[in-house]
Length: 140
Image (cartoon, rainbow, N blue to C red; front, side, top):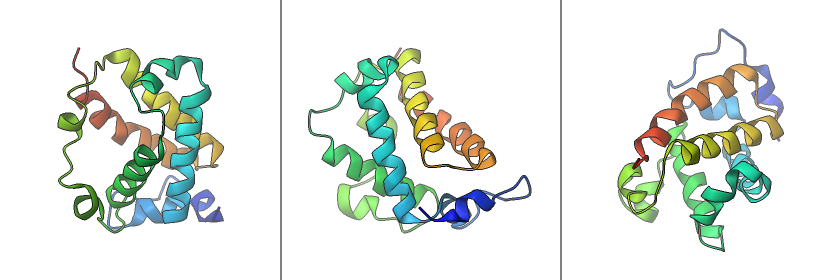
């Protein structure tokens, strides 16, 4: 992993251009984050429910989340060309997602961010920003 992500500070501005992606350490770092995210989903007891909502083979899920996050963090927007329009709530409409599932998803992301060594300010920013789409996926 690139040590750039450790150099962020309270003065760092996220969400402008590719600043978030650069703070994360680039595309390879996002791929590692997603790997750690799904690894956490496999092992954390509180994530059993959301793991059950996914297919046995997580390759496509990993690819989609990686592609989405790279574009969302200000990198190349490849999601639409590869998978179609991004419609996060619609893509999850068929799933029974409530507060427990939302929180488990965010817990897996927090664990992954810890494991890749994301700086505290970047971690706070990402978890705050990701809470909104996670909440939008709730059906109950």
